[in-house]
Structure formats: C-alpha cells, structure tokens
Length: 273
Image (cartoon, rainbow, N blue to C red):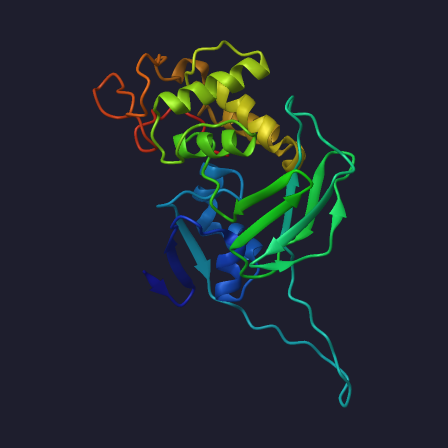
C-alpha cells in the first residue's frame, strides 16, 4: 500500500466502507471522503456509503488536536460522527409499513426494541466494528450484510437491491443469468416499466430510487442530476436488450460473446449507487 507523510492509499475490498476505514485509522470518515485527493472518487461514486472493490481511497494521516481543560476534574470526549442503520420496511407494493415492532441484533447482541416510523423506517445507531446484523420482525428475521452493497450500475448491486425488495434474483454472484432477468422482470411489472428483463438506465434509476428513497432523503435525484450535468449519462448509452430463453442460471452472453458480469457493463451505465 503506497504511503507518504500525508497519508496512505487504500484499495477497496468487498465489505469496506468509509466509517470502518475511519475507525481503523482513527479519523472521522468525513475527513477521508472530503480530502482533495479523493475528489475523483467523489465524482465517480457520488455516495460515500457505496464503494466498489478496486476503488482507490486516500486516507490522510490523523491530525493531533489539543483541548484546554480544567485540572483535577474528569472530562468526557466524544468521537465525532455516528453511523446510523436505517432499513425501510415495505409491503408487497413497496409502500412503507409503519408501527411494526422490530429488534436489531448486532453480532449476537440484542438492541432495545422499537417500532417503524411513519415512513416504515427501522432505525438504530450501528456500533463500531459490527459486521453481523439481523433485523427481527414479527413475521421473520432478515440478515443484513453491512457495507456489502455494490453500486447500482453493477449486476451484483442490482441483484442485492432486488433481494432487499423481496424479489428473488437468483444467486448474488454478479452474473446476469435467467434468474436475475426474471427478478428484473418482476420488478419492472411492479413499477410499470416495460417487462423485458433488460438492464438499461431507466430501470437502474427506478430500482435505485425505490430501494433508497426512504434512506437517502432525495440524494438519488441529486446524484442523477449531477451525472447529467457532467454529461456521463444518456439513455442512448444503454446496452442492447438481452432476452432470456433458457431456464437454467448460466450467464447470458452479450454482443461480444462474453458473459455479462460486473466488469462487462458498458461505460454508459450510471456509476453511482
């Protein structure tokens, strides 16, 4: 890993997120995200909560801070920033379900129970270092992978978002196969889109908005407008439609004869989550 007196460069692996990197290096994650050397990453991803394996993140050296305090007294200092976990509980029509009792379990430890708010949000502070999260609801338990959500333009990110919405996309493997296409078609039918199982910009916009509208508070629309202003997005950039005729989960082959996976999506796709 390249190092300098000013900081180090980190290559993102699956499961990395800025809050965890900040805790590891003992600096606020905002200092990482807002550092000038990470401007290309900010432009590319747009959302600090979504990183992709292989992304390069510059982590600046921790700066010392001196505080003046009265002697012979106890003083409490709080690290800046908290990480909040917010899960939207939706019904089969993707409408929020309010007043539902829920309990989070973090690394096997139960947190105090609560009820979803008017927007169907189950909210809790996420303790430092937690990896294993379970959301308990009256009708079942939902395991949650912390910091594993891939960007919305990738096949893996599409599969993850469909799964989170209660739609079966097949294995979360980053490969576009018939099961993923069926899941896309099911989502398209629910949202009034053309039912063809294809991945194209309007589908990605709608999936991202439905999945994250309750937790990003309008950021999706701002990021989409940001992409348009940069000239990086156009409906004309969509990949050719892919139809599904076979019944197994073998990869669908694109125009060049290669399996369509996370690394094969054309550059016209939205590169933010």
